[in-house]
Image (tube, rainbow, N blue to C red; front, side, top):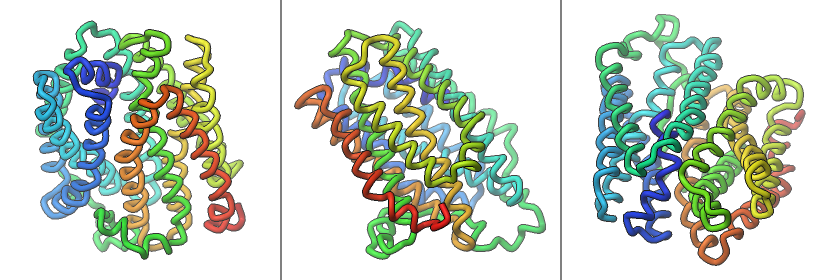
Length: 378
């Protein structure tokens, strides 16, 4: 995730300088998530059969190849190929790592293990943009991130034990609740999905990812066109946003959930995110711009763990399947968000944020009652 953070400040500008159009840039953003959605169930089932370590190792090596290749090429079709490889590789790493944590923790320890993973991800996303923003060359972050991924693969090869052999005896007979399920695109689009009692939570996950990826795709061009900011300024902004998110998630989120319940936290996240999006076009740089960015970041990032926490308390069997659907809806949002946002950006650079704010408010009010039906006491 440090590698992911490092390339954030330069990705949009580097892609633009290779001659890619805005639509082609949006496709590069979407295709990565598309590969994640399509290949996560494939890698998941392979890791169930052959082990977590081989999948993680293959994913890290593929990610290294993708990043270094992206920094070397200038042809759009080769950029597209590199992004496809990166998405396929990431599908092998991130979900398998979460499954690894589930393998080596008991049910009582699992939330703590996932929390540590969340902290590691947050730290990488926080520190990475600051490092990437300070690099003068726009291609250099890709080489550094690729090198980190390769180094990581060596650590996995020599230091990481295989988790499937480490399952405690008490968990030898895995229940449906504990088993990790890998959801395919066909299963997401099946009509039975819409009849699930958790459809409202799935839709929150979709629209949260849809709006955040749309924001992330257009934001570098927005601040460049409006204020002339570039790679360095963008890195500082994302570092501030990431730091605020980590502090909020690590110090406050768990306590707030206990006091206000998951449903209210999700509604608050949607409202805070909508407010940040709506205010961005009228920001006065630099302070208020960063402040509104923090609203968007916190509003986005508190929704995912809160959704997962809520589902884990409501489901007593088939928990892995429901969380798999949650991840799949999130991936679908990440595919469609960039394309929609770039289309709006080409009309007016402020439109993506105003429209996304409106969509989030519609989701907030439209799902208010359906979310309450998930857990009537909240």
